[in-house]
Image (cartoon, rainbow, N blue to C red; front, top):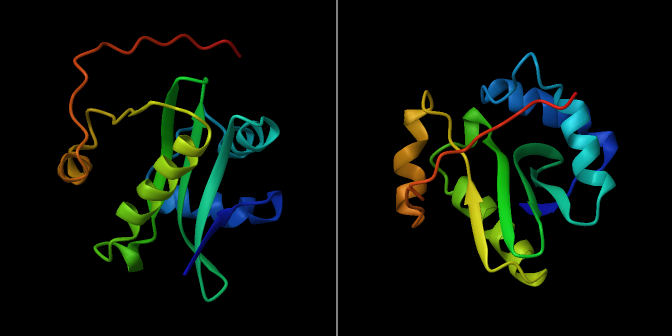
Length: 136
């Protein structure tokens, strides 16, 4: 398995994986998120590839202090293999290399199935309220 930064050529495979994982939302075009992540030096999307097949992704970025993780997705055929943990370690390493001292992520309240996964990786509830406003 290789973990590498994805290129625009991989967009269809990434979007299919995100759809399989239930991460896409109608109001948030995934291709636009992918392009934004690749267009700035402070973010990227890492892809896990086995036998030329994309089996996992994680989007990672930072503001110079705090890192953020988005779109962690593992193919159904690879779940339970440790790939999610490996992708998170790769995202954390990417952030450390760029000087980030903290990493955060958001989990939808409706996605209770992944809470245990993040607990096992040492993530805890930050006891903050996330506010959002659409600008598009």
